[in-house]
Length: 78
Image (cartoon, rainbow, N blue to C red; front, side, top):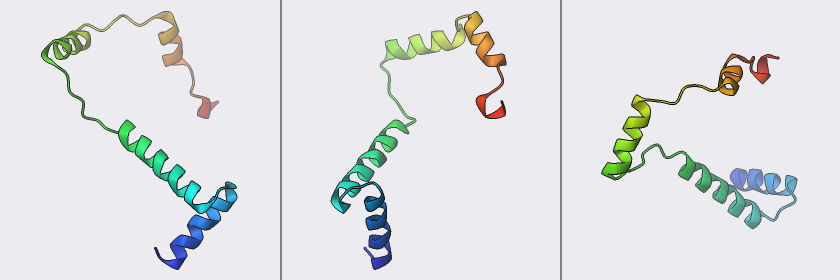
């Protein structure tokens, strides 16, 4: 890594009260979790696929709680 990159990483580690190696490991772990959670492809067997299609074709009716939440002003607009 370049000196500039190492300086930034060392500074960030210091701000968190971590050694550089701890900071790097924690950062890599968080990036790995984000990568895993960001996956958009998933695979279903035929039965699960049909169940998903059935649910999409005939969704449950919205509850009163859901209706209230859908009409409520978002927190960032309050």
